[in-house]
Image 1 (spheres, rainbow, N blue to C red):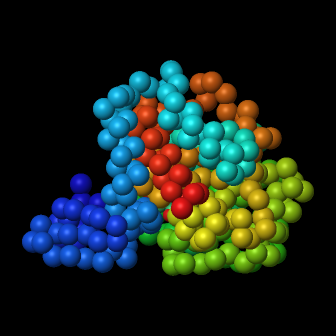
Image 2: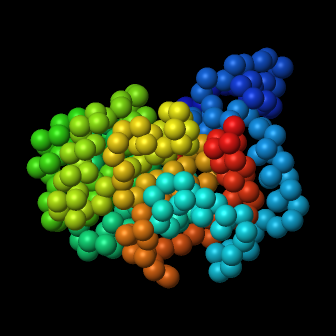
Length: 282
Ligand SMILES: *Cc1c(COP(=O)(O)O)cnc(C)c1O
C-alpha cells in the first residue's frame, strides 16, 4: 500500500556508518534507519548472535520459554525498573501493552498525553499521539485521552486526577522535532501521579538504548517512571519492543490478558542481547 513517500534509492549493503546502493554509491548514514542502527549497520556481535541462533531454533511460541527471551527480559528489568517485561515486536506494540497495563490497573481510567508526543500508529497508540494529520482520517479513536500543552506544568497538574490511569510522555520528544521536556515538568508529572495513584509511563522508544549517553534518557533527568517502553535500537535492526514495569505493577497483567505470536522469539532476543552487551559494556 502507498503508505510511504519513498526515495528512489535502493540500498543493498551496510557496514558501520556506511550504506551502499545498487549503483555502488557509498553513503554516510545520518538517518540510522530512523533511530534504529545506533551500533551501526551489521554490527559483528549482532550478526554473529543472529546467525548462531537462526541455525539452532527460530520459533516455538510463547507457550514455552527460550533462553534468549528469558535472558533479555531479565536483563531489561534489572537494567531499569526492576519489575517484569512484556516483549513485543515494535514500538507501537510496546505502547499498547503500557496502555493495557495502566487501564487494567485503574479500570476505566484516562490517559494524559502531551502535545507533540508520538507513541505509534496502531489505534491505541495513535489515540495517544495528538497530531491532527495522523489522527483525523481514523476517527473515532480510542476514548479517554487528554492532551496537555508541551512543558506546561500547571496544565499537567490540573489534568491528573483520581480518574487518571497514566501519564504517558517521551522524556525527549523525538518525532515532532527534538524537544527535551523540562525536568521541572517531569517532576510535576511524577508528583501528580504519586498524589493520585496514576502510573507515570515514559516512552523511551527513541530516546533510550544509550542514545543520550546513559542507557535510558530518564537517568539524566532525576525522575523515574513506573513503566517504560523501549524498541527501535533494541534489536540492532531487527523488530523488537518491550514494555517494562516496576515491581509494584509487575503482576497487573495476568495470564490471558495480553499476548503475541512472534514476540520475544529466540532470534530477535539473541540480537537484542547482543545489542545490550555492546551498549552496556563497550
Ligand atoms: C518510533 C516511535 C514509536 C513507534 O514505534 P514503531 O516501532 O514504529 O511502532 C513510538 N514512540 C516513539 C517515541 C517513537 O519514536
